[in-house]
Length: 111
Length: 113
Image (tube, rainbow over all chains, first blue to last red; front, side, top):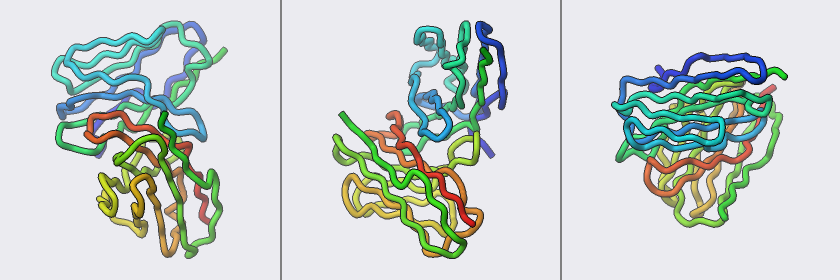
């Protein structure tokens, strides 16, 4: 079973629309990371959130870490075709060398 | 700056043949190293990780093995490949400490015939 549940699994929207991807768990994490992956390449880190309730903004992307540090969301405003990709969340716990990855959300932005 | 190299990019192997995938990191010392497998469009399954030379932790029982002969070299091997070993294999490194972000190579697409 997946420690981190991502939803939705697939998301297809028109250019200019907004979207939100969710990452939920019953476990507490010391930090939560978001990655974006394009076909045939490795994932690339977008952001790390470490404080409960934290909100980080990267241009049109807004990341939020839940108060209890069990969940996170990624919101994209005015999506562009360049935002197309597989979005992965990953949780880290203290005293653990590993990350737990969600199953990913495939986002397609149509021009 | 740090870089990670993974090769080959694609590989087609017959069932029962051996495997060796190599990953090297430059620009950092004593990194944590990881091997993942990814099904198409899905999340990452951790196969092995290493926190130092000769130290390998296995996450999933299978016919694969990993070795770390040098500080910045991580090798994924198999003596006899199965059809189920097909997939996209990713190597990653991070600084010490599990909360550090991971930096990935470009992956190897392995097809077993």
